[in-house]
Image (tube, rainbow, N blue to C red; front, side, top):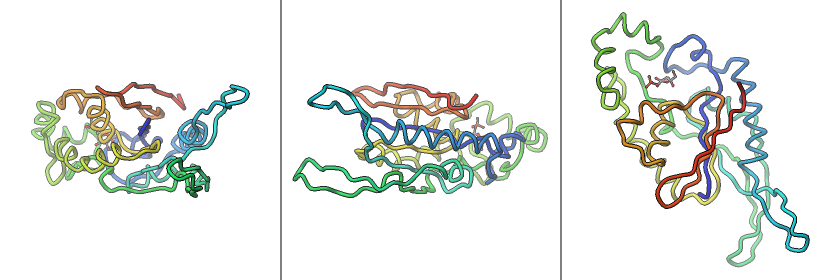
Length: 227
Ligand code: F6P
């Protein structure tokens, strides 16, 4: 696409407790972010600027746009206020008018957060206490470390391949409501960062990252919607 957007879900009950993984719903702050994200989707993601040929004035008009979430509650709840809207757009090829449902949601399992296996639902302090050797091994090599009965960042890289291909071939702007680990990998891939840096990329809550691909990477803009 010309541009695409990465957002984590709003704050979840587990974020508040410092627990990883799980399938918790949003806190009140998370719901507030969800409302603000809906405004952002409507104003920015689903609009493009056109110039009136006669007056030369620029105005924003609705454009086709896509919305992808994971299968987890927290991303679906974050996307819940984004309005699906039927818009009509002129296709230039043969001038035919096509109807578009903007922001029709698509849930994609490959966008689910890195699965922490036996550590799912624990805090980092609990992991360090219950599984000290595992905790240590993860500190040593975060990229390849695989949680017992769970995944590593490398594992997730593989299941993101189809997502990356779909991003690359989609023409319309895409808003992806996902998770910290997932967005670290997508961000690192599109920004051309070395893989071993990916697990450390900062992807804060309450922030939309706008990526505009060009020949050798992407331009980036961050919008903090809630502080
Ligand atoms: O804490 C939120 C979270 O998305 C967890 O569900 C996930 O395990 C973690 O972030 C990934 O971050 P890190 O790889 O730094 O532990």
